[in-house]
Image 1 (spheres, one colour):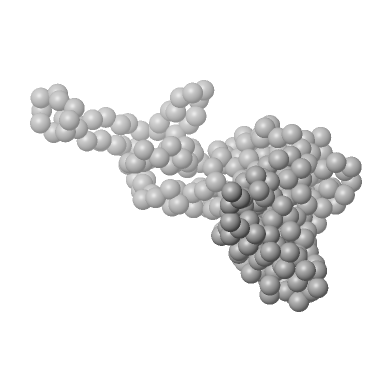
Image 2: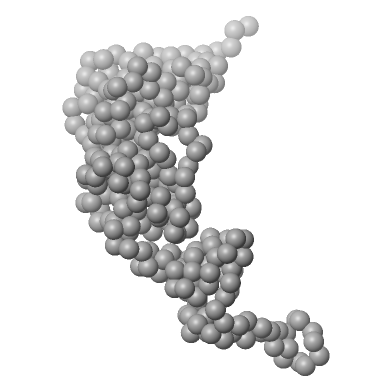
Amino acid sequence: MCKGNPLFVTQYLSLLELDQIIRHVGNTYLLDGDIRTLDLDGDNRTLDEEWIVSGKLANVLIPDSIEAVLEQCIERLLEEDRELLQIAAVQGDFFMSLLLADLLAKRELDVLSQLRRVVERYRIISFYMDVDWLKNKSDFYIFEHHLIQQAFYKKLSPRERVLHHHSVAELLERILKEQTNPSRRLILEVARHYDLGNELILAAHYYFLAAQSSFSDGAFIETIELCKRARECLKKVDNQDRMLVEVIQLLFVVSENRWQGKPDLRGVLENLLFLRKLDTSKAELLWSVKVLNVVARYYRKPSK
């Protein structure tokens, strides 16, 4: 029935519990009705058995997919709880009560009370303790599965998502500026939400800050990925050549460090092409110097 999907099992049981078909007592479920097996061959073998169901469960249609199960679970929620979790889903798989209260324009204490009730009643979210940033400023919660978070998130319109992401970014940025040494995770969250909130220059700025931080820690692969994200944001806006040059320059540096003086030629040439399209004198100079270095490194004759 559940095709081996544990999320299907847990959410379907939750659905049956919400419909008061089963009751959760300790580690056991009690059923209103009866389930037994019928031996089709009459010789007590189990290979050809089928389920015989009675009571309320006999009239329940089994959803044909996990998405259908989640949709039915969401429909069973109180409207205020559904709205709460839709806004919470904007933050991602885990979310902060502090931000949620700001987004809903409610007192955090009231939001915490509502979240506690949701945790106790539904198998949708739970407390999230595995976090080491901002834990003194907010409680953290996590959706039980990414598909659950996505089910709530997709209930919002595209414009609602953009506006909420922008608000989350502003709130996180305000927290970031209050700290003398903010964590890279916090910087990344600000960048990600500005990116999804279509504030691309600010997104690029914070991606670049995170890239500089990861480079200082020797995390070269992460640095390259963050520089690429910043570069993609800057490609979509005008008059940001200076920042784009700085991002590409860091890409060159990290490439040389990662490969010990022998950067990946394809990546280097890709960045050179970006530089060549810019109009600033700094970009032209950097482009010329890098071209000469690449040519010298890859095409010079070995010394005898």
